[in-house]
Image (cartoon, rainbow, N blue to C red):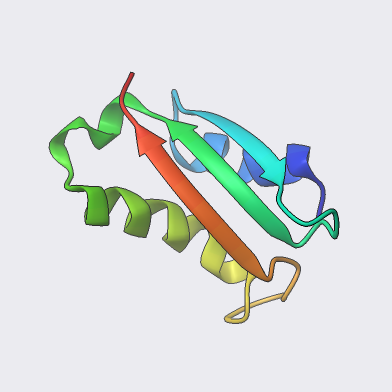
Length: 77
């Protein structure tokens, strides 16, 4: 899975979000995600990260294994 596909997963699941994706290891399976979404405003940091991980989980060990690891950073502005 490439960086654009990972960003698209997040941006489609969270309308109005912007997701910047960084390949952390050069292997295209360890991703750093910086997710900007106003919808995080009413959520705790833990809830924000869970929201993103629920989007990624079908592509991780619970699903296709296309993604091995995700580092998540979230913000509202």
